[in-house]
Structures are given as structure tokens and as C-alpha cells.
Length: 585
Image (cartoon, rainbow, N blue to C red; front, side, top):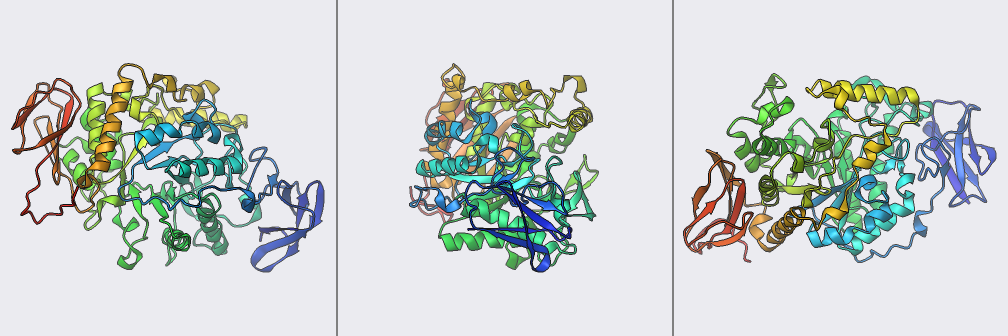
């Protein structure tokens, strides 16, 4: 016996098509419909016919074996043989994340292919992988941000069982899993929600058109749709956290904002499961209310991406100042980012021509996720260049040192740790010719507005664009790549060894003068030389040199020479009379 249910207040009649039979469904309260089928179960193929039309996939479909335009399939979540019963989760404070796109991470481009490379991540020393969206989306390749069947893991990656095997393998390896979810819009192809009910509203607008209706008539069921989806990834797939895409595009005028309600549900589930579960938000507003507690008037999310940190570091290390990078060229931008993650804390933004953001007063460092590269900052360049194509090897090591000694939650982007040279381009797989043409033209127009030659922009629909974006794992042992990988491993070992690097009570103090960047976090000091000549840095007496990116660095008792494009780290002796936080090592 299997019970089929669907929320569909719009049609006057709903029928279930299941394994080739069409059956009437009984209307329930508030627009719900129900049918019980005695011989249906795991693997049964089904859809819903609205007012006699062709069957459509279930809005809550757990599996789309034939893609977003095919029928749904029943999944028995209790049938999977999990082996992670001893897994107690991963806490976000102190963790290091690793952003991964399943389709390009391995040669297979599947969950199984990603499992093969988990030993590399364990040896690297990260704590959790953050997957770009894996909900069912059009075609076989894409970034995942145009998903339409939000409850169904993408069939091209391996479907529900593939994701479960991946999460199970991660937990066996000591790695957590974070899922990127998109609740600000749905993709155009296969998006049938409006035929079922009022999932969208013209009361609010987003860059993708009508907004998801979180505060209009009948919006209680729309909110439940999203809340149940969030909980599903954590309960049925054993994931450890969520990353919410572009929450600034989520409009909700309710007294209880959907983000606050979502955070509360996730934390309640974590309490029930007795392990930490967390929610990270992406937002461009620099609004501390996202991560303030509900009791303090915030939404209670656990952390927010801090793109300002990336922008300030990128400008300092590459010299780029076009577009939004123009807001980060001021001499104090980099020290501000290193200290508080956000640069635009109410200060003037030249690109917006207004003040932007608000000071993160009182927020602890683990409330911010920072990176030197991510899918957006790489993939939204015309040619998808990674930092390895924009910086010297020395500056790549400086970027890594700044990231992994920061007081915030660091996130690496796949392949960054060995200086991968393969680009990460924008790619799609739309089968509708008109939509494909619109995406191609829109991409070129968007990048032309940033000053890139539209004729040089790779075609997102070309399968070669996707193929070029795959990681080349053969480079790991090549000269240059192996040295950078060893540097990342060294820094991650230091981060685990030295409590000062993960203690949220110890802020980063930073200065940037004549090309010499200095950062101090408790007993750990850092000096990076971006000047055109070598610089000499005086060390406190008795300091231990922890790491240096240039083997030719000279060092004596009290000073160290820092060559051009290099960085050194040291550990100072602890003053036993200091009243500052001083965890024992």
C-alpha cells in the first residue's frame, strides 16, 4: 500500500496515473488530494493529471529517473542500508568547507565518481563538502540553480541512492555534507507548479520573474513545501547543513519570515537527531540580521557568505578593479575584510552610488563563510578563469594563508588546493531551442555589460564548455601543483594544531602599508609581501617560524626577510600574565 498526496487547489479534478493506470483522487481539506494504491511501492512510476490533462510529475517527486519532463518514481527512504550510525555531525565553528560541483569534480561526473576522490579530501584536511545544487534540473549538465523538482536528486548524478551512498561514504571518511538549495526561484523547463497551485506571486519580483509566494493567499502550503524540502535533505539524506542561494531574492512580508522559520525547523531537527545541523545563507545585503538570533530580532541563521572578503583579497592580489571590484580598492579595504569579513558596513559603495550594508557589531567570526574562489566568482567570469590563471604561484600561497588563518569559516573551491588550471565555465543543457538561444544571448549581453567581449564568451550550451570545466586530476603531482597542494596541507595542519586559529574569541588584527600586509591572531602572526622589493619583518623574541612560502627566506632570532610575493607565519611565545584568551596547546 502506498498513499499518494498532492496539493493542487487550482484544478477541479485530479487523477493519479500510476504504473499505466489512471485513478481518481479524493479531494481533502485546503486543496489537498489523496489516493491509496494497494500494489504500488518503491519504483512505481506515477504522475498527476489535472482536469484530464497529460500526467505531470509530482511537485514533491522524490525521483525523476527520466529527467524533469518524465514521470515521478516512488522512493522508500527506509530501504537504504546506512552505515553512518556513529556519525555525530560536524559543527560549523572551526570547520573548513570544500565547495564541489558533482558533474565536474570527477571524470564520471556522478556521486560515485566523487566518492573515489574522498581520500584526497581527507588527506587535505577539510571538514565538510558543500555540494552545488543536486535537485533535478533540465538536461544532464548544469550548475543546478535552475532546478524544478526540488525533492528529487538529479538523475544524471545517480539519483536518490547515489546521493545516499555519497553522504554515507563521506561520513565514513569523517566528512560532513552541506547541500546548496534554491528557494528564490525555479527553472523554466519542467516547472509545472503554477498549474497545481499559487506557488508564485506578482506581488514581488525577482531577477527571474515572479517571486515564490511566501506571504500571499494560500502561502502556508508554499512555505510548507520549502520547509519540508529543507528538512528532507537533512533527515532522509543525512546531510549536515544547508546553503541557501541568494536569500536577498526571497521576498516575505510575513511577521514570521520564511528564513527564520526555516532556521528554527532545522535546529529543532538537529536537537531531535542529537547532532549539529546548520544553515548558511548567501546574501549581497551585508545585513547582520540574517545571523542574529531570533531573540535579538534576527532570522537565526548560522552563517552568511561574505563576498566582501573575497573581493578585497582578490583586488589586492590581482589588481583588478572593474565592476564591483571598484568598491574594494581603498587602502583600508583589505584590513577591514580581514578583521570583520564585510568591507561595506554602511560605507559608500561607488558601484551602487549609495551607502551599503551595516556593521557586523557583536557577531562572532563563525557567522561568516569566506573564500578566495567559489563557483560564482570563477564561473561568472567570461572565460571562467581560476585564481591560478590570474595570480603568481606566490600570490596563490598568500591567498591560501590569508584564508586558512582567518577567524571566519574558510571554504575552498574544488581544485583550488593544487592550482587547477581548468576553467570553471557557465554551462547549461536546455533542450528547448528557444530557451537555449535566450540563455546564450543573455549570457553574452550580461558579460558585455561588465566589459568582456561577447564574442569571446563560450557557448553555455556547447558540451565542450562543460567538458573543459572538468577537473584534471592528473596535475596533482606536476611541478608547481604539488608544491601548492603541500602548502594547503601544511596550513590546514596548522589550523588544527593551533587553537588560536579556530578560537572565535581571537579576532584578526590587520594592517597594510606600502605593500606589506600583516595579520595577528593571538599568538600567530603573518606577513605577506605584495611590494616589488623584499621586506624585513621583526619578530617577537623567541618566536617559532611555522611556515614560509619561499624556501629562500632568511631567518634569525629576531627578524625574517620576506621576498616578493611570499608569506611567512610564526608563533609567538605566550605571555603567562596576559589576560587575553589563551587556550592551552
